[in-house]
Amino acid sequence: MNWLKEQSLEDQEIQNNLLATCKIPKHIGIIMDGNGRWALERGLSRTEGHKQGIESVRDIVKASAQLKIGYLTLYAFSIENWNRPLTEVGILMKLLEHYLKSEIDEIDENNIRLYSIGKLSSLPKKVQRLLFEAVERTAKNTGLTLTLALSYSGRWDIVRAVQMLVHDVRRSKLAPEDITEETFSSYLQTNILPDPDLIIRTSGEMRLSNFLLWESAYSEIYISNKYWPEFRRTDLYEAIIDYSRRERRFGRTSEQVVSQSKTIEFQSEKSLNTR
Ligand code: IPE
Ligand code: IPE
Ligand code: MG
Image (cartoon, rainbow, N blue to C red; front, top):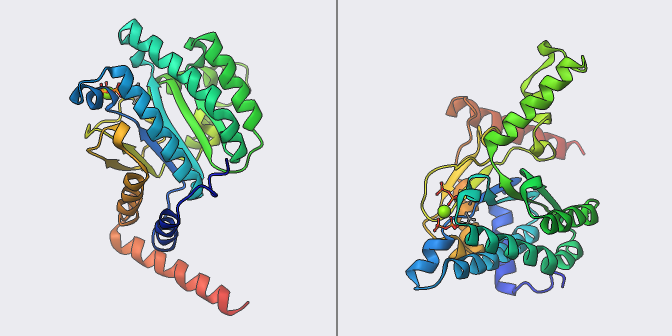
């Protein structure tokens, strides 16, 4: 099903308004938290919370694709999550397997490029195979890049990058003095993604829990009090509106930022007038 066709007129109008009035982040990262608490408060099992969480994933992926967001990275399972009770880990892996099987056709049909980061070798073989096939199958798609962070942790990726870098230095492929932030970034698994502009965390928790540690140096952080299973597209729109109102200074003063954006406006007006 083509997602653009199934969109309601009302939602289309809201999105058009967002596109006309807001700065849309190029890359959004989401720490999807609160499935368990959502279920507990409703007298349901944690499994039900995770299942309902997948409905939120579906809606947010669709809305992001419709809004033509370039990159969406979803933190679905951390390395630390392996320490949860075995039964919960098993259920999460089964749900992941089911998600990949049932969604891949629609993901591909909608021009989504699937990508994954994390210590994938720890995942069950079946999941690894499905992921690999999905990534291969959608590699040439040009729409939203949907990255699943699975068995992922930011520190793990940084240490892995250091190991590979040292290896290259030893083989004289890289000189220590050539190690810059850019070269270092190129060793991270996220090297095909721009740094996230906006990181959303649900369930009111105010921490990164090992998500994109290096990449989030200048990300705007938005905390939603909703649990992940109840976080839907209207909540995403609110986060984007909030992001759009922020001034990203990257260490500069507010005056510098304002004058720089005026110069850019002036230059683009000039180039329009001379066309
Ligand atoms: C997020 O919800 C899903 C994963 C981390 C896999 P949680 O399962 O962490 O839910 P809470 O935080 O216990 O409510
Ligand atoms: C963060 O949620 C990891 C994911 C959303 C995958 P957790 O529930 O594992 O985080 P903590 O333990 O509360 O920090
Ligand atoms: Mg949690």
